[in-house]
Image (cartoon, rainbow, N blue to C red; front, side):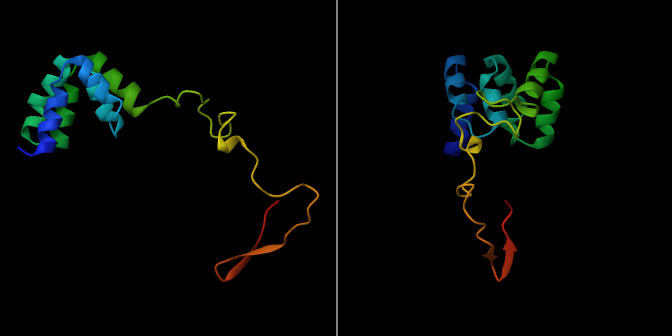
Length: 128
């Protein structure tokens, strides 16, 4: 068994506290979600999906066989996650101290229009 596979198995079958700690380091939302599930849920995932090669079809079958609470938590945490903490979730309303909330560098309002700027071989007019 490859090292990666051994680590995956160890994390999925780990005690709840260990798996929850590992969830904060997961690269994908579905990995974090799985590691936050109770050990019994993770154990069924290992025996039904991971043991046989982790195929998409097996994952779908496993999910459909789970209790409603497990399926709903997957929807809420992975498929329809809320906005990150500290933001409103609207693209036009960034967090007050973020770089997106700052005005773009266009120069002072009294500065003359710099005129066209080169883009590749073409020239385009800068929008105010």
